[in-house]
Image (cartoon, rainbow, N blue to C red; front, side, top):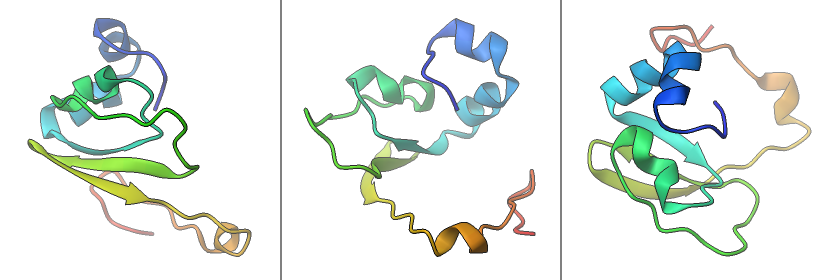
Length: 87
């Protein structure tokens, strides 16, 4: 979403309020332990993370992930609707 955090994020980006209320999301390339605040978690960070490295947060559970993006995948991107349906 954005590099901003705290109350300013919730004011400027209504989706942030939904993410916070849901308590579930994907954080790519976290740089500080505070990057997980919107989801209520503190993150362990790496000094030089690999591209595509991130975490999935669901409740108080944090799982590290590696996301890949290739030139071939650019032609197969689907749109995800507001209720999670893929179009």
